[in-house]
Image (cartoon, rainbow, N blue to C red; front, side, top):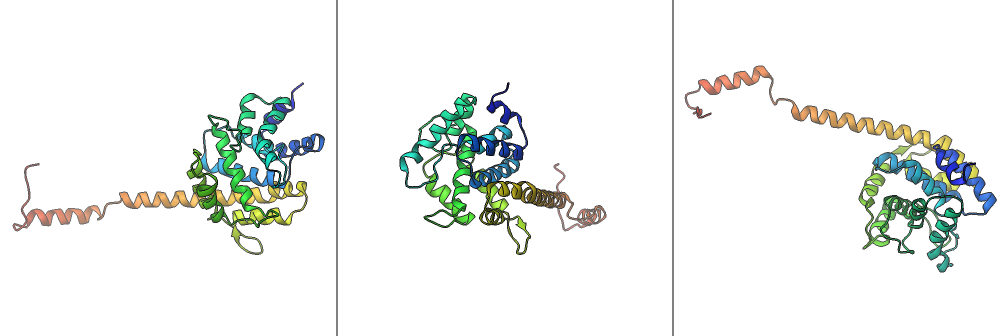
Length: 267
């Protein structure tokens, strides 16, 4: 019989992974709330945008489980420093391999695990940026541009994350995507709005999977098509002769016949 780890890693559909993790959280009391789904959706979009050479299935599974021992209480400093390592130890016990657990442990840097796995850098970016967009008891959520500045110049200041600049490009791109509802708003603002207005975890999963994902994927596909066509026309224009072939012949003939214009025969 397959272990839980084998079972969820073999399932490639993200919505099914979410459902599996939801039932695990009910059985084992691990941390799993709307913020996990919110961040997983940002991770999915980032991986689709960047085409980074990683196993998407592996990363999204880690994204759903890496916070499994998190305590949602900013006052418990000791727990904040230890939850990622404790989570990795728990995941190891339910069948996940050493590398998967290491990736999850490295979602933050408190365990000083080095060298860092490339998948961990993705989790770190998504976890920190996604968390800053959401309201917390001690503060309201930041706007995407504010969160990016804080991510780069505060959270990751003096730290190396190999995908930081790619992630910034991705967020800038995502901010150009407008989603129409009653009011038109950017894709990230729409995602935050759904998060704030949906109370239950299961309903939020449905909203993301059946409403948000099809719309955003379609809008991104259209945006990419428009950009590709724009680049094609730019290249076509750049390679187009300045004058028509007939005009060019007339100009050359005039230059060659004009005695005032010296032409070189050295070539």
